[in-house]
Image (spheres, rainbow over the protein chains, first blue to last red):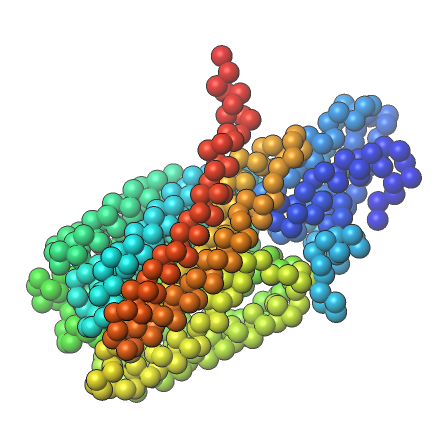
Amino acid sequence: MIDTSDETAAEVIGRLRNLIDPELGINAVDLGLIYDVQIDTCARELRVDMTLTTPGCPLSDHMVQGATNLLTDIPGFDQIDVRLVWDPPWSPDRMTEDARRQINERPGA
Amino acid sequence: MLSARQAPPTIVPLRFLLFGVACLLAASVWLLVEPGVLLGPYVRPHTVALAHLLVLGCATSICMGAMYPVVPVALDSPLHSVRLAIPHTILHLLGVIAVVPAFYAWEMRGVATGGGLILTGAVLLTYNLARTLARTPRFGVVAGSVATTLAWMLLAMALGIAMAISKLHPLLPGDPMRWLHAHAHLGVLGIFVNLILGVSLKLLPMFVLADWRERPRSWAMLAMLNGGLVLLASGIALGSRALAIVSGLLVAAGFGIYAMEIAAILRARRRAALDPGLITFLGALAAIPPTCALGFVAATIGQASLAPALRLAYAFAALFGIVIPAIVGMLYKILPFLVWHRVYGPRVGREPVPTFAQMVSPPLQTATSTLFLVALALLLAGILDAQMAPVAGGAALWLLGLLCFVGNVARAMRHWWRSPPPAARERTKP
Ligand code: HEM
């Protein structure tokens, strides 16, 4: 769970809710794709670690670039660094309640 | 890690897929215009030409096209060469365009030449994917299925060419009908069914959000299907009905294990609702057991008067009941994905983009599967009963269902032409 008590982290998470997985139609935050948000105000650097539902997904470049596009105009940062990580691998257990509702999760699955 | 830059450009698979859909449409119109191709003995020029428009023009083209983007995802390994795909595309399309009219005119020199072009293209694809496979981090059951599919593809095509040459100069010994049956089984089971089974074990869990892991029984499935196919083709070619039936049972047991895997995936799935594309695909899988049963009856019935109609019904059910619906179901996933990748991928985070599901119409998808189902029942009844009316009616319904599918293909493709990606637009600025 990412700490969103920090105003910038909350802003980052809010913006990444506009990054939608095109197969599932659910945003990256509710899917549990965002692993970490690191804010270095001194170095004016913002770093996001994210994953995708499938390793080897050919959409990875578009999703990383899309996340970067959504974050570029947050004031106070010279560098936005969105990284793809595969460890730990994503699993459906990472989805929020909201995402589970959206996919109409099967009870007992 | 595979990235968009390492995946082949979307136009590479798209050419194959659209050509395949065009061949399917042409074959369905042909069936309506000449329903008699499905009545009477099946080794007649028009029936064989129509069969190859379907198997080579539609099914093989779509399987080849889908392999380019799907294999790198399934194997987590970038495609060895994008450039090799260009001569492959040209050879394949020219080959199909030559082979089908040659069959129609029963011109075996043309069949062998067109077949040679197709086989040369398939050799390029095999080399390209073999190099891709060699780099896969882990050689799993999906990689095994792709490798065996490529091997069977080359063998089925080489045998087809040898059969064509045999009609001009003696080449293959023994009864030509045996070679024909071996060739058809190698093609349908070895290429289409083998690929569909293997790749679906990777793709289905992705689509339904299920945690599926390969286990020894997944390998047993692949071994039974492929080992059974070696014995089946040998049994048929040698004229040993006992061997053919026993090996057919081995293949059927492989299907049984596959059914257990699919049931396990569906039980573990998180997504409750299955979309219409997946339902079409699962419907195609459900057609495997009755088609196998038809095959066993056709193999054991001997020379009874119903035998030719049963054999034709068996071949028809394999193509129209399993292969084509499975391909249509998967195209609902692959086509929007390819168009989205090119058109909307560069726009993510800049503007709202549609999801894959929003690029096709679910009511049209449901209409396709419903019409296909009714058409299949009518066509099979007509073939078995040697009646023209149900065959003609079934052909009309099949075409209607296909037109709904083509409507969905057009819906997805509309995005391709209407929305050039921002980079392309920038380049056109003065
Ligand atoms: C290089 C490509 C191919 C060539 C040159 C070729 C050649 C032939 C020939 C000459 C026959 C007729 C044999 C006879 O009348 O004695 C035939 C039948 C058949 N082939 Fe192919 N073939 C090719 C690829 C394929 C593939 C990939 C499949 C996939 C399933 C396939 C499926 C069939 C079927 C089902 C029949 C029986 C058709 C019927 O009786 O109506 N062929 N092929």
